[in-house]
Length: 74
Image (cartoon, rainbow, N blue to C red):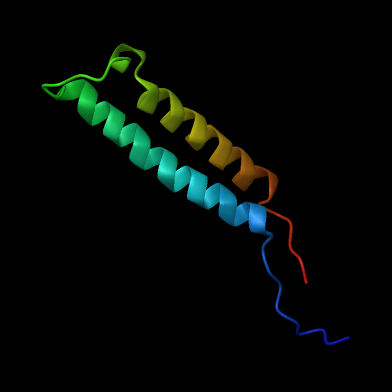
């Protein structure tokens, strides 16, 4: 086989990057709404779902990145 074949990262590495990026955006939105609350509040606004899900997505994205940081596929 060719020894100069390109080495690729697994798909889970890029899933981790996407989760991390979207988690940061959702968490930032939640922090913005916490600092400047909208005039009309949704029914379950007190649960702060965007803060929770932003944090969960960041944690999951970091977990995917950490677990797949050294793996390479041919």
